[in-house]
Length: 204
Image (cartoon, rainbow, N blue to C red; front, side, top):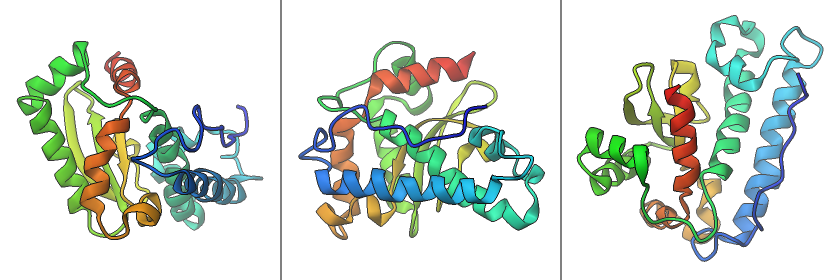
């Protein structure tokens, strides 16, 4: 397996403005995300786990030696969660999903607005640091929930297809304590095409 690396963003640091500012994107990607990767690699290098994909490590934390399990859970989760986060955002995005994803959201939540309300409530209701997630479960159904810190849905057997980072480092430079405003504006950069691609892959 190739050693995991921090991939560059697929768009410019300022491409998500005015919704997410350039300074936040630089710090978030280049500093926070890099630190998660560095700490994960420090924990697993030289062990039998160093050639195991981070996603696979997270999918079965019971196989991780107890002395590094917390590091893998926190920093491996931070690395993998952010990989998805950058992908499900894009400049000139937002709008509404189409196709099978739109049908599944309507079937599960009633309509797009109801889904967005439930997702936003999960994001706003996460006490302290964490994430809001849209996941595909084993039976192919959709679910929304939040998780603390850098916990990954993969550890519960679910496949994340949309995630929103509500750690303060994700929004505080621009929004200060106004998490709800950050959540509301974030819909303007959601890359529904990528979410639909992840949904299709998870359903196979």
